[in-house]
Length: 124
Image (cartoon, rainbow, N blue to C red):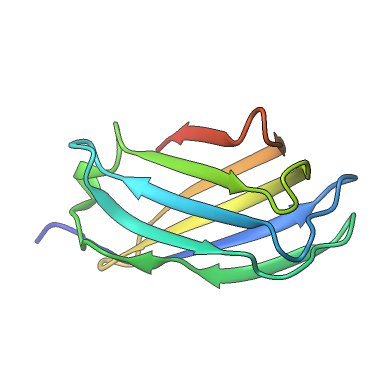
């Protein structure tokens, strides 16, 4: 039986540029066809510099087979800053969990999002 996506969690570690309470981060996981497999948008509150927050659940919208996510799927982070001029510098860990107990993990360090560069996309 093919393993399917059953869960997703994300953890953030803020570096030197903190996240204010009202700014949102949207997490979108897409499969190889471009269909959304998991998605969440939330402010998660303020994150001080040098702080770790999470893991936070990311809602699974489609229990897609693992082979439709890797290789060729993607993880996008969309920054919705409020106030509009705010920025955020962070590391993150995204854990995609499958029905057979396996995982796809995405770890990224040094992500910097601001109004001019408000999206980061990573391959699975």
